[in-house]
Amino acid sequence: MSGAPRIGAILETVLYVADLDRGMAFFRDVMGLPVLSDQERLKAFDVGGQGVLLLFEAGATTETVRFPGGTIPPHDGQGPVHMAFAIAAEALEPWRQHLEANGVEIEGEAAWPRGGHSLYFRDPDGHCLELATPGLWPGY
Image (cartoon, rainbow, N blue to C red; front, side):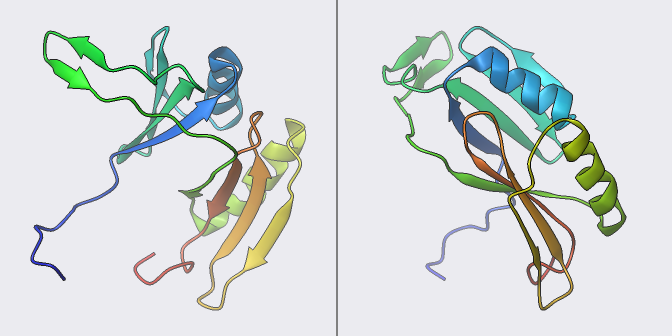
């Protein structure tokens, strides 16, 4: 450890998408995430009361944003990324059924040595999403 103060959690995760409305519909309607903010330049969702998922249009945040409270530096990303959502073990099968009922193909599945289980699928922009039960990592 470098002597840095302890970090409590990851607060925001950002995905860059081709179509904000399509992304919003997927994360709101299929993933069931409550909408925190529906702005023209970003969509924000509550993730279990412990984090926020932000959607930005790919290529649209490459300029500094200035507002009365300060500035936000440029940021952007390219290509599909991976993120995992924590779910309860008993929610695995209901999630499988829910995804299939919504036409979401399950691309992969894994049983982990500690007892966790993961389902892998993609959002409309090709990001690899994972639903993971406890036992995947130490402490989870």
